[in-house]
Length: 390
Image 1: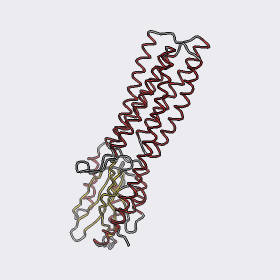
Image 2: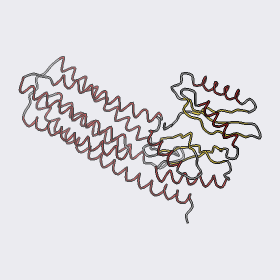
Image 3: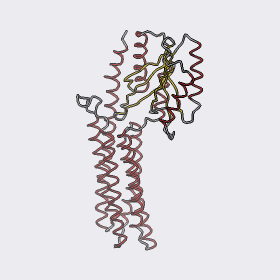
Image 4: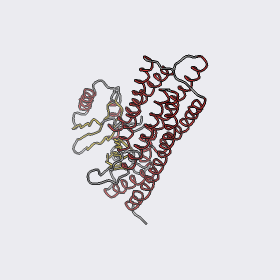
């Protein structure tokens, strides 16, 4: 029978590696499709824009080239992110994908600003545009192609958890709106003689700028280290609580080293009679089970011993819990343990970020519990709300 460490090695060297290679192939293939589609559309639109004198169509062609560049950046970022860990970067290069997603959002933002500038110029100094039937047909085809491409690329991005693909797909969808507005403007000009092309282009440019800012804000948040999503935290907690011997899970801290490269640490409440050997086996089983069911790597599992042999201490715990949790914005109390021989009481609390004076509340609780149990040395640690699921 294989040991837990041997099974973990198989999971780490086999399943994870295969999953990563498969994900990389999917991203690269999707990006190549995006490049080919955008280059083809750019060529058609550039020719039509020059023939008709339409600034909107010409700018749309330039935007298609930037989209192709975005797909190329996605490929490069994915390849670099797949580099194996080394001495300088022992956690790997996965966060490069967030950087490539940020670059794409900057390209989208630049395209929106450039388009807005050109649109304003045309509003101030209008030029008559001429539209031909072939031009309108190709614009309509471009709208359909961009809608399909945008949905496809974004869908794949969501499936493989690639922010770069999601941003590229969103950009393609915005392009379909630009092309659609150009088509509408052309039809209005043909049937009513009213030129709204520059105005519509300006409005769409503002939409693109907002989307670029939103994408940039999201990717920067991930690079800075944002809170893990609630569903992941709930799943991790649930898996660990399902392990025999663990009575509670607290202090979940997650570290995101790139898409699908999440590490975490936690504290487990366990009975105070467990031996070192039993705790070691529990930790190894927890690491194995969590990785197998969620893909999250458990880097450390600390221990909170729970008193099990003294009813007096259990009553103390209930009383302390009632007092502590009676405070507003007090989110959690855990790790309660009393050493009756040394007259020492200790536990942790989490004060919510909503509290106006978190330090003041903490000091008040410390004074309150010490006054209730003057014969005990009371130690209370204030933990941070890193990933509470409630």
